[in-house]
Length: 163
Image (cartoon, rainbow, N blue to C red):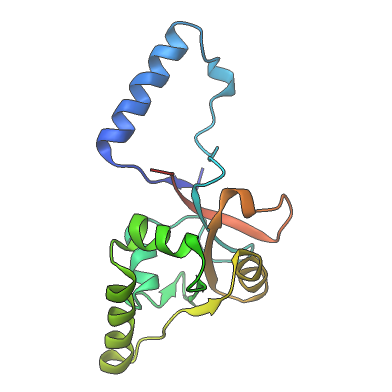
């Protein structure tokens, strides 16, 4: 499928080893295996249903939010970011961008003033991010898995598992 599950090699190897042993010993039925499943606190990267790509890599997501990548599939991309007070924002910066909050803001300002890059659009919370992404052409955003409703008008582009 088009969804990327982003893990470190060590963590992925351990997870696959445990999964294989569970299947072998009959503890985990192979029919119930789904790589698209996600924990409620996994970061889910979303876009509107008509977004030109079905998946994004971790590098593409980083570049979109840092203003380095502006186009996907011929369409201008609009990064929708969470509000400053939201705990998900710090997790996103740690797990995806790998910068502190201050470093991230400095990168955005530098790119905006030196290169003319567009900065992300900020929404106060996950509900607002979901609405904005669903209603804005080319928009991408992130929420927790538990925030996505079954018919929210968005598609999942990538999953970053909980640490």
